[in-house]
Image 1 (cartoon, helix red, strand yellow):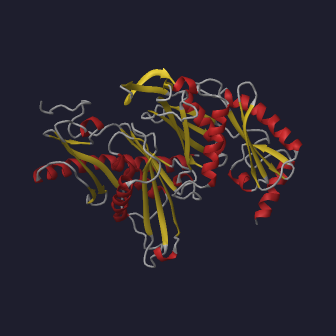
Image 2 (cartoon, each protein chain N blue to C red):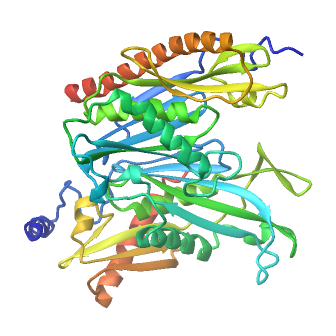
Image 3 (tube, rainbow over the protein chains, first blue to last red):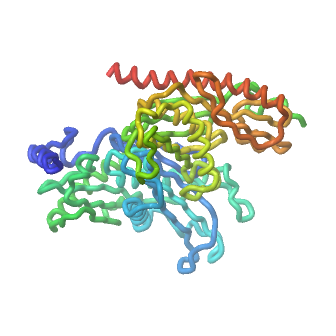
Length: 258
Length: 235
C-alpha cells in the first residue's frame, strides 16, 4: 500500500508536478505572516504555509550571563509540537523531533548573528537580557520546520523591550525600543524522493521522502545552518542542487517578512 | 472608594466583546477558537479513537480526556512549558464540565481527546477554553445533548459583575471570581469554582446573571458552527 502511494508520487514528479499541482521548486500557497498575535508576548508571529500553521512568541527577562560570555545576552529556544495540532502528536516531554526543530531554529538564529547579543548586556558579568523564544505548532500539514523558523525570526524582529525598573522587569508595559536585530536568516527545507528534489514537502510527501535537507541562509547568501534528515544518503551533487534551489527560494520568502 | 463603575465602562451584566469560530485546526477531527476580550482559546478534538493502555478502556462507554495548557508567552510572566498544578486541576474540572453534554455510550473502549491551548490570557481562560472545547466536540460530530457555555461571574468590591477582567480580578479591596459553565439544554451547572468572599444571596443572583450571559454565548457558538457548515455547503 505504502509503496503504491510512493510510486504514484514518483510518477507525478517524473511529469514535473506534485500531489497538489505544485512545481518541484515551489512552496505551498498562500504563505501568510501575522505579527502581534499574542499581546502578552514582547514579540509574536503566526505563520501559515498552506495549511501548516505555527505560532512563535518571545518573552524577555533579565538574569545573570553565562560565565564564558559575561558581556552577552542569553537566547533560549524551545518548541512544542502541540497535541492539538496533529493526531500523531502526544502530550509529554519533548521527543527527538521537537528537540531537533528547536535546535535547528536556534542554530540558524545564533550563527547568522541575527540578534546583537552584546547589546543585551546591562552590566557585564552581572545582569543581561534573556530572550525566551518559544515555538508552538497549531496545525501540522507538513514542513513544520520552515514555518517555525519563519515565525521565530518574525517574532524576534518585531519584539520590543519591556520596562525595566531597579533591575526588575515590569511586565505588561512595553517600551518602543526594539530588540537589536539585523541580518535575518531564512530556512528552507528540501526533500529527495527517488531522483527528484522537492522544496517545502507537504504532509503526504514527508512520509515518503528518502532524505531531507534543511538549509538556513543569511542576507548575504551565506549558509548558517544545515541539517540532513531521513534514512537515505545524499550525493554531493544533490546537496549542490538543493542549495541552489534554497538560494532562490529564500529570496522569495524574505520579501514576505513584515 | 466603592467600586460602582466598571474600569472598562461595561454594565454589570455585560460580557466583554466575544468572537467564535469553528474549524481552525485542519488536522483535528473538530476544532474551534473562542475569544472573550483579550483572552483567546483554541481547542481541538481527536476521536473517538483507540485507547491505550488497554486497562483504561471502558467496555460500556467511550471516555473523555481533556487537557488545558497555556502558551508560555500568553501571560505577562513567562509560563514554564509543561503541566503544573494549576493546569492539571483546570484540565480535570474542564473534563467534568464537558462530560454531561456528551453521549459516548455508542463508542465503548474508545477515548475522545480534547486539547485546549490559551494563546493570549486576560482572565477567564478556563471558561474560554470550555466554550471552544464544546464547539470543537460538536464540530467533530460527537453525539451531544447540548453545548456547554462558560463565563466567570463574581463580586468586585460590593458590585456583582459578569466576566471579570484582569484589573477587576486584582481589585485591591477584594474580588471574588466564580467561573461557571452551563448546559444549553437545561441550564444546569457543570463547572462551579469560587475563591473570595460572598453571601448565599450573591451566589443566587450571580448564577442568574451568569446564565443570561451563557445564553448569549450559546447563540454565538451555534452561529459559528452553522457558519462553518454553511461555508462548506457554499463551496
